[in-house]
Amino acid sequence: MPAFLPAAFAAATLACGAAPSTEGTVIATSQGGLVQAHVEFEGAVRRGDNALLVDFVALAPAAAMVQLVAIEALMPAHGHRASADRISIDASPFRASGLNLFMTGRWQVELDLRVDETEDFVSFPVDVP
Ligand SMILES: [Cu+2]
Image 1 (spheres, rainbow, N blue to C red):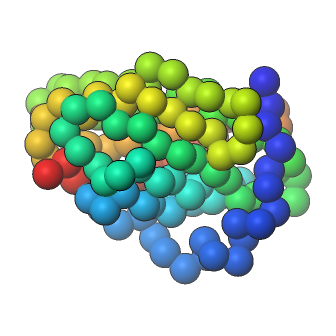
Image 2 (image 1 turned 135 degrees about the vertical axis):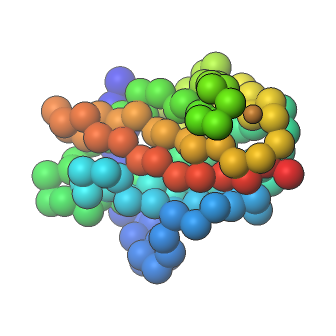
Image 3 (image 1 turned 30 degrees about the vertical axis):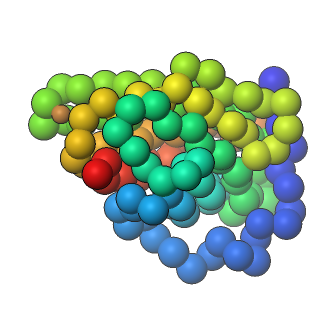
């Protein structure tokens, strides 16, 4: 089910890149340039189960509806893979839970999106302490 974009985030989220975060807040532009994601880990990034809030700012005029289809995390060096158990779409922001980052170190998190009729994704690193 689609969720409608809130307009309120635009002013606060334009400055940052996708630097690795252990503090829990990440801002990153999607690969296709359609949206900017604002990701906030509840608490901080931690080893084990993580929950996160994800919101989107439209960057393209046509990007009216964004679905967060899935969240995956990879630790390529070890072939580790994790995904969020559950994504709540009842209200914006999206809330995902059960993302089990089970090993200390660098994970690459990918948000799989559908923006209107187009698939897009956001990718950013996080460091699990
Ligand atoms: Cu590992």
